[in-house]
Image 1 (cartoon, one colour):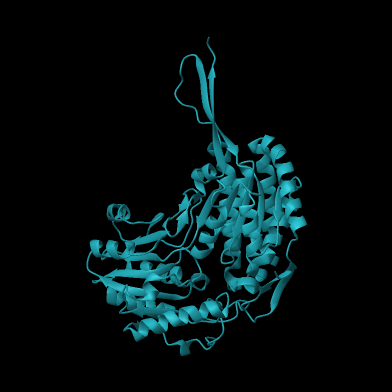
Image 2: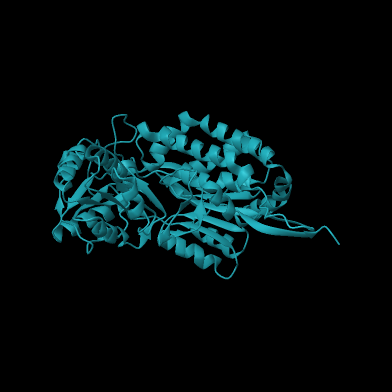
Amino acid sequence: MAEYISSVSPVDGSIVAKRKIASRKEVAAAFNAAIAAQKAWAALSIAERAKYCSAAVDAMLAMKDEIVPELAWSMGRPIRYGAGELRGFEERARYMISIAEQALADVRPAPKEGFTRYIKREPLGIVFTIAPWNYPYLTAVNSIIPALMAGNAVVLKHASHTLLVGERFQKAFDKAGLPPGLFHNLVLSHEQAAEIISGKLANMICFTGSVPGGAAIEQAAAGHFLSVGLELGGKDPAYVRADANLAHAIENLVDGAFFNSGQSCCGIERIYVHKNLYKDFVDGAVNLTKKYVLGSPLDESTTLGPMIKPEAASFVRKQIAAAVKAGAKAHIDPKLFPADKKATPYLAPQLLTNVNHQMSVMLDESFGPVVGIMKVSSDEEAIELMNDSEFGLTAAIWTSDAGAATHIGNQLETGTVFMNRCDYLDPALTWTGVKNTGRGATLSSLGYEALTRPKSFHLRTTL
């Protein structure tokens, strides 16, 4: 096993950070310290926990000027958008802190004479968060802050591309004065993560990543009766009905497809447009896509940065080439984007028409700046195509008829139904998915249920 993990920049292939992998002794010490600290932490009131967590959020935001360029170097997001992730981080963290008192309150059934009855929510113990690189603060905060607010200790393993994000979380909690042992950022290999899970060092695993990664997590946890939350990505569809606001749909769906270079689990990867709007939609989307600026994420004029690594861009290039060979039409000439070069992570955005569901680009998660557009004749046809996927994270409906959106949404196999928006998490609503998108839920009051266990009290008060 390698002794070090390096964070390689997609900007120029340089090393952003190189860190030594935690030793067995360090891993054991971290989990032992977490066990020791968690009981006292769980005994604190929710209001007291909130003070620490709120202070950690403040400390993280105070590092914004360092974090924004760090994100650009680490994972390639244009610097002009870097602060947006911190705004989302703050929104989710503060919301989950604000609802903790109510979400974690005892559940009390109707009174019964002679008895006191209630269900208490108790912390699980230690939550092991395994976070990805594409939205490194947003994905991690979904479990970290609620886990702590619920009375758990947390151990974080961040992705190799974003090692520095884990260190930022540690600095924020240290600055907030969080009691020692409650939060640990560990640099770990995949093998070590599996050993931690199979060794039952943690009580719950919160993983965001690929389907194969989720399968590996479940395999490591099998037979150990651990709680597992898996968010494994998507192939999220959008449907533009005949009554949609065309300009609004074009603007938002192009952004939903290409923001973060398409590297979003809930990004738009396939679009179905009613035949009455199809030509105008395609023309508008092509014109808007041509306005993107592909280049170094450190340049303020850049609106599309590199993908995370050359191999990821190569996969998308192969999807595009295979689709074109099978009859698809590519509407964007890569020559319009001089930074697009093969064998690099810099990839021009692409819109494809004449696509079908026999093509990989319409079935397999691309996780890159490409989207296929298909013409449909009815809501029923759109629903059938939107459900024709192994994934089910979000689905977006563009219409002026809320009733129609609700009717369609009830028939979609998805975790979230959007109307006239996409690619966004509202912390008041639970974040979940169906099929190969994973299992479990984060955010909202339901997110707290996954981070606690119920304990019933049945007290006879009259003899």
